[in-house]
Image (cartoon, rainbow, N blue to C red; front, side):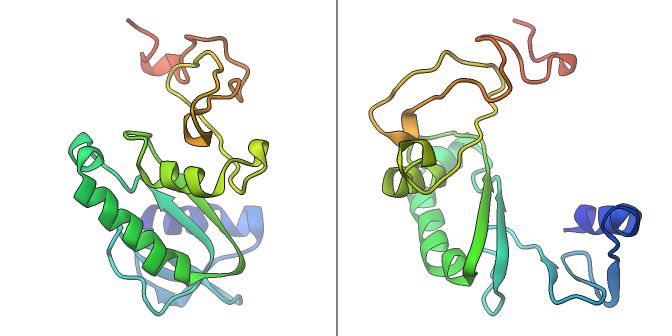
Length: 168
């Protein structure tokens, strides 16, 4: 929340003609001056009851291999989605989930299994930016289907070679 607030403070006026409202400008809860809304930041299971969302951004809901491999944690995360996050989404609202696919039964896996990818007639647009481009393949279900690399990379090509991630 704070890094996004700083970006709005630095670039908001020049790029979008907006600024942070000085009346509501905490690091994790700030509004846009002259507009309804702003940004509320909370960790998963951090409590967002009482707030609605036109855009719900979920970033790395699973942080470690231990969480990914824990059926208990994955179930708690799913309960948080079903009972808290989804209930905050306004009609017509959008959801962006950014995550590393640590486990096929993670939040994205469950949503894809239930609602599918747009390419297969489902609900979810998936942008797969693998660290290393893979060969396209069809899996057992939508959560395991890898489509051609959206960036046009050849199989084996690194997402960020300058970061040294193409070194074997």
